Length: 187
Length: 252
Image (cartoon, each protein chain N blue to C red):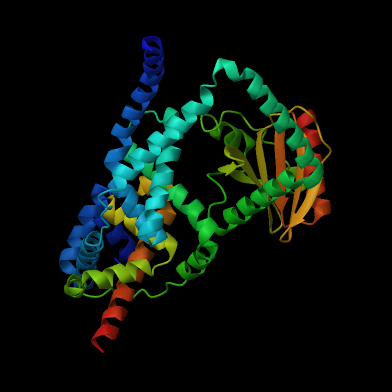
């Protein structure tokens, strides 16, 4: 009886150490992970699934994590897991995203700051949700997570120049959509 | 300063990505130009609006995640810790697996290869679709090959075929068959060729396998213990020419 318990204890120690270390570096970023997954999948339930799946993946790859920015490391995994999920469940979105994103032309100045400030939360949520995937992604990474252009370039695998122009187009598009939505609402 | 060209600068300024000299220039301009200062204020307001719709995680998410982790770990531990006494049992399972694998091979033929062909074709399409053809754009094999150092646990052969009208465009990391792989990109006329490479685990050497999916041609072969998959919308003859060239070059 005693022997058996001792054996079990010996086995569990290194695993528990790894898990504690993992939980300390990853769990603080669950909020950011959920927010990103929620905006990419556009759905609470799927976002939770993706975050859970990302954690299991991250745990498997944790050996390859060399310390440093745990948040960035984990969000990269969440982002990739989201894309796998989208590919499996909403493959059209990857194509539509590309078409739609090519479609921003206007160089006209955006709406007034006062106007944007007056837009309510539901309106902003709706406008952001309707953006093409890659615009939504870049806005979440930049505006909500405060990532630098370099980090965005690394996480989504696009050149820095593309980060700049995509971000500018995404903002323009969101502003336009906000304007349109509130005009329709007041009518 | 043209105000239309300023839009990207203002974006970069708002993001703190503009160097000091340009920042000072722009700040001066923002004081003088009403249109630009308006779009600057607009971007700040937009940021606040986007931050305002941050989605908070449900309170029990962490609990679910932690319990999923523990469950996963337990099942892993269980599979690793096979009790000594069940060696006989394990070997009978092994025999069963072996038999059913044989039956599977006979019944389903080349379906795992088919799946792999599907996978590389999807990767090929994705690389063209998502504006992410290369991580290291270069036609120089001596730039592309070392780029993979530290990113993969193997060094892929990078072969220059420019004299045969297959121009090296660059290299990229990709993920195929549950592992990171090297993707080399070549171009002939308007056609892109993705060449996926990763180490092969079994030493047997099969003949080249060709297939066609969704209008894309694929050729699979093994060379110096590497799995090689070439995918392109090029016609099969030219794609075969490509693979033949690679083989003769690498054996030199």
